[in-house]
Image (cartoon, rainbow over all chains, first blue to last red; front, top):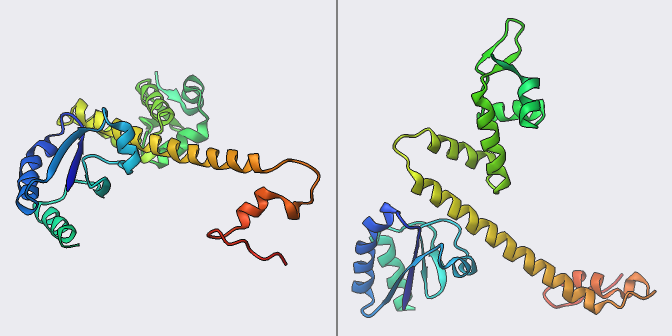
Length: 84
Length: 141
């Protein structure tokens, strides 16, 4: 599974939440691929996924969170996908 | 010296109605009213009007511009907050460009199908394509 966090440089909210979300993802899906993408450098890809607000999170190339989720929300989403 | 609505509208190259609209949208307020009830503006209001116009040209709507103006006046805000708003606007614009390109490509495809001859509109492939629903051609009455 691949998780991509789109962020804007200097976003303190992203920095604060990033480590916790990443730890949650790795706990639920061992070996998960975690990428952090500067939306400005990956503009075309962000548009392709439908990202229009930042930060945003895509899972397996699908925009799932258009704002930062809580660890609990991310865990629920990953658990659902793992079971599917 | 305070400026009347007509004078400031002329300097900013907008209409007086536009300024009244900005006022209703809480983007600009007159500094005072004359004894006769006419709106009077400080020269600084010109900068605010130009700000609004420039931001509109970059795709921001009036509600978003209100937020940008609030950021400008907020000592706790900094450039990265504005940068984020600009980046999100760019993402929205690029998404619209992408959607419009898709529409344009669809039209290119339809135009190629039409030989533009004197056939009746009943046989027009472009109209027929618009009538198709989920690939099923509707029966003509």
